[in-house]
Amino acid sequence: MQTFACARTYTRTNDTSQQPAGYCRPLSWVFGVLLYWGSAVPAQAGACENTGVAAWRSGQHEKATSIWLARAQAGDAESQRFLSYAYSRGLGVQKDPKQSVHWLRAAAEQGQVDAQYELGLLHELGIGVRRDYAEAQYWYGLVVDQGFCPGMTDFAGPLKD
Image 1 (tube, rainbow, N blue to C red):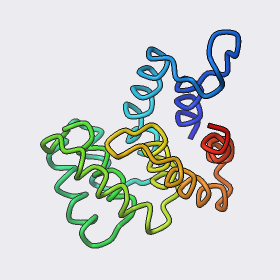
Image 2 (image 1 turned 180 degrees about the horizontal axis):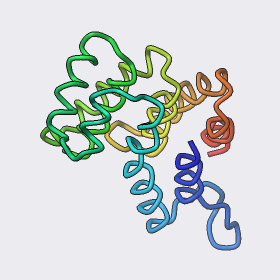
Image 3 (image 1 turned 30 degrees about the horizontal axis):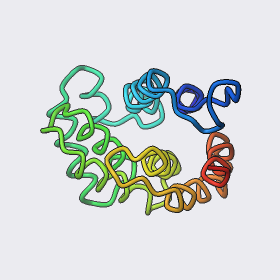
Image 4 (image 1 turned 135 degrees about the vertical axis):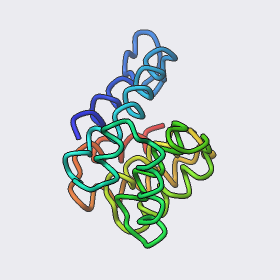
């Protein structure tokens, strides 16, 4: 969870002497997105000990994604989120932003808080989806309702922009 807060810190700036609040500096944004996407699976690996995560950790990305695909199709929200990450990076599967968002949304709709937060972030930044502050606020609101702290600060972000 710490990683997500760090990613948000690097994706926005409030340096009003240079730019208005909410302005996104390109290098900060790139670093934040890389930090965010680059850590999605490892940060959660300890939370979900299963054969998919074990395969992923050992570099067997194709095996991991096939395990996650079967579980995702059966409705497992964690596997849907992990599969979304694999599609976003093209690890174990062909890179496919639409499939990535599809599986992330499936997990988010089941109440998986990390997926809800990530989907809100994607909508706020317009990564893989159309930029939509109302949609971002909707997902952040669900995250806030579950007490997920990074979502609390992001919930107000689209309101002030």
